[in-house]
Length: 124
Image 1: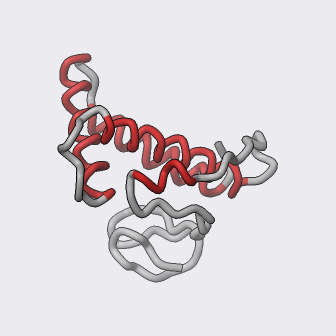
Image 2: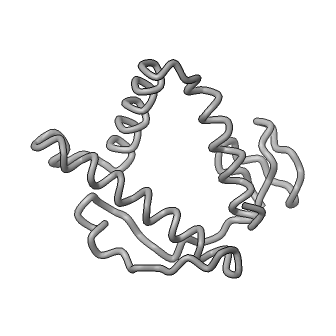
Image 3: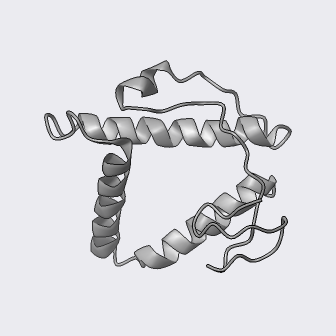
């Protein structure tokens, strides 16, 4: 397996060069190529941990819908922008919200990475 961030190759559970635990890749079985494509995403049912992939698809679809709504509430701003640009702008705005709420954005990002890794393993 290979780290998505730094490219280190190794076996499941090993640490890569950037300090992340190598985890198996689970194909999402969904595609989001643009904000418009979000409306075509399937309604996947939550399984409560019985099907890791289905539950992770539910998580991805929820986030895709948030991203699409974020782009929609800023008319004209995201006419030809990539999904990466929209997501990075959303994350930046969340960082500003954390400033207002006096919450540590970097700490929350670290927790989110840990949660993501656990969810890929089916632990959460």
